Structure formats: C-alpha cells, structure tokens
Length: 472
Image (tube, rainbow, N blue to C red; front, side):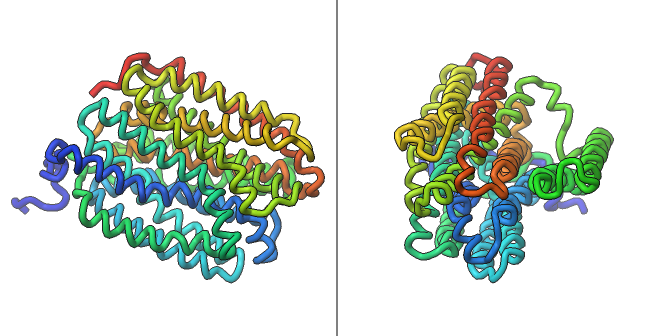
C-alpha cells in the first residue's frame, strides 16, 4: 500500500507535455485528427444514404431518423464519462479501446439484415466514438502547452472535424454510387486499423494529475434526459404532440432534468460541474456549439431529402452538391484558429453568425425549381459559418476548465456538438416526415429559417467572450 499504484493522485511523468518536440506534437495532432475524422464522418455520412437504406431495409423516413440519432445520442450521452475514464486510466488506452469498438461496430452495421440491427450497431458505434472525441482533444491540449500554438492546433483540429462533418455526404454519395449503402460502414475498417498503428507509435500515454470519480447516477440521468428529449422530438409528429404519450414524455423530461441538477449539485465530483454555467462565456460557448451543429444537421438532412426525393438526384450528385459546404468549412476553420490566437474569439464568432444566417435565409423560399447557383451559394455560406465557429467555441470552452481535466473539458464541448446534431436531425425529420416528394420544398422552409436562427447564439457568444487572445 505504500508503493505507487494506478490510483495515486500524483503527477505521472507521461502528463508533462513540454517533453514533446514540436514535430512530435504536431504528429500527435495529425494522428488524433485522423481518428476524429471517423467520428465526424459517421455523424453525417449516413444522411446521403438514407433513401437507399430505406429502400434496402423497407423502412420510411421516421425509422431512418433513428439510424442517425442512435449514433449521435449514445455518443453525446457517454462523452462526459469517457473523458473522466481517460483522465483516470490513461488517454491513449481509452482512445485505442474506442477505435477497436468503433471498428467492430462498423462491421456489424455493414452486415445488418434489418433496421433494428442497424440501429443497435450504430448505438455501439456511438460507444466507441465517445471514447475518441473528448480524448482526442484532451491529448491535443496536453501536447500543446503554449496558448497560441494550442489555438492554432485547435483550429486545425476543428478544420478536420468540420471537414469530416461536411464531407460525409460527398464521401457517402461516392461510395453508395460505386458499392452500395453498406460500403459507408466498410470504409471505416481500414482507417481504424491505420489509426491503431499510428497511435501505438506516436501518441504518448497521459493522465490527469488528479483523476475524477465516476458519477454513475449523473451519467444515467444525463443519458435518460437526452434520449427522452430527442426521442420525443422524433416521435412527436407521429404520436401527436398533445397525445397522452407525448405529455407523459414532457413530464418525464422535466423530472429527469430536475433530478440530474439535484444529483450534480450534491455530488462531490459531479459528471458535469453545473457551477461552470454561471460563467456567461462558458454557457454561451456551449449553447453556440449546440446551435452550430443543429444548423449543420438540418442543412444536410433537408438537402439530402430535397435533392434525392423531390428533384430525383442520385446520392452521388446530392453529395457533390454539398461540396461548397465542405470547402467553406475546411478553408475557414484554420483561419478561424489563427484569428482566435491573435485577437480572441469575438471576430470569428461574429463572422460565423453572419454567414450562417445568410445561408439559411437564402433558402427560406425554396421551391421545386430553385436554381442550382442559389443552392450552392447557400451551402457555401453555411459551410463558411460552420468553419469559423468551431475554433472560437472550442477554445472558449476548453479555456474555461482546468487543464488537469482536459478530457472532461473536451467532453463538454463534444457533448454540446452531438446534442446539436441529434436535435437537428430530429427537427428536420419532424418537418418532412410523411410529406410527399412534391411537398418537400415547402415543408423544409421552416427548417431553413431555423438554420438562420442558429446564428443568434453565436452572436450572443461573441458578446460574452473576451476580445483578447487566449492566455496560457
């Protein structure tokens, strides 16, 4: 008992980031970015394949929403506990375990014979992804001790993640056109194998100086709250918002949320320190992250259904149409990181809000014959807004927490993103479920207005953040 054990709270040598050379630090970033690409792609790659999956498995739009949200909900639910586990047991160890689970679940998705099996496998994918997203950011943050270098690294990290989210439909469309919808899951396997090899060689092990206790009651309540909330958004249009089942769901959501707040306030080491939300900048960053991904998810799902079902485009053509979105996100995210490092997050947040609003407003009068240049312009504007938003939001959220708990810091930001993705899919699906192809354009107009409204939290975040560059 007097010797050092795995549960000691002293600082392990592996936690000291300055030991890494500049080349090694940026190699670590590249490896983590490759793995994060998987998480982002699988959040959106399925969108463009939904019509094909529906035809292949004999299901409609309503059931297909769960194909997307089973992944994002499990991912969002477990990010916090995965970050805490990584801080306690080792970030590289948890990261590698997540890759293995993600890869095996991808194989199960590829072989799924029914919608139920596919949804279950997607949920397991979410478990693996939850062990990648916050841990990747924690590894990057700990490898970059200098604030300016860290801001640039977060910009690159956000660029890769943004590219993966926006490029998912393009990748999915090309794969489906060549090999069918199951190939969107097969493609993960070689990437996972390569990532495992690179992590073993380049990524050092690290832990928090003081490991957090696991808050299982808080974890269960958070999971229940997210599934109840998003599940009601998905099922509400089908069962009726005033039905007994929906009203019961409303009551349960309130009760579970209240229980979560009560438990977290009384727990010595809570899953989520609610006191952080007393800081306006932190709260604004989290709400901004939710809104950005609500906008992206609504845009991608409405675009997929409109182009394929209302206008008869192929999955590949629909995916290619979103290239301006991917281009805007990829080019602007690193630039946003540079701006954050030099002048702080306010300017990129204002730019992000302006472009997001403009993109959504372009399509509020969408009809069956809207000209392609207007569609592409709208997608470009939304992609630019998305690219500018991620780095300042991530930097603000991470800077608001102790670096010794970087896994939990990354988990809060990532949880907000995935909650936004799940809510966006649920909202978009609710607008068009049961609508005939000829009515999709008109039904989706409210969705594009919601995309424009997602700029408001970004403007609010800009007003509450510092105008000075990030501090060490």
